[in-house]
Length: 250
Image (cartoon, rainbow, N blue to C red):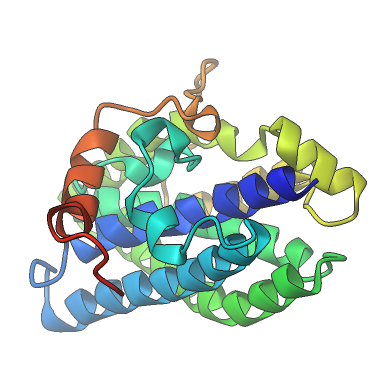
């Protein structure tokens, strides 16, 4: 039970860690100062959520690991994030598309997790939900501005959504540990979020004059530790200081 709870917490948190790391790469590289600061703040919000999750995971591990160990000292296949969040910052449209597609899911997920029988997870979800509400507002506003903007911004936003769409189905795959947590009233049955997710996403896309991609095959594997070619490079940056200078603290 404790091992499954630990893995479930990590599965949730790793999405925030890797996306937060991706957003952190943009610091000083935003299209303008206001947006640059906004993306950095999104990264800080996600990393703050990660700390809460990892601190709880460390407690569940009975002191076998610290939050730093969980964040920085795991091999690639032990990270359980979805493939979407590790996709690169190709251009600003990709940054917004990735953020938007994750934010819609993240908001729906936390809205359910706040009712978890696990009081710690429920408390983290309630606190995080306030931040994620802003994240969704930010990314959806930019989606509309780019999608319904100039011909070039529309084309770039459409291309980003077309390319990233294949990673959305993975949100709704339940791992064995997640299934056990659902049975215990702790976890969220992500399959129940699928219809609301795609309905909400399509409404936003329609408002942004972006066409919904039509594909039959979706990418998956991140929740089982099988990541894209980008993951190793992310971890090389993320883990460098801790591996080069062991026992450093956040």
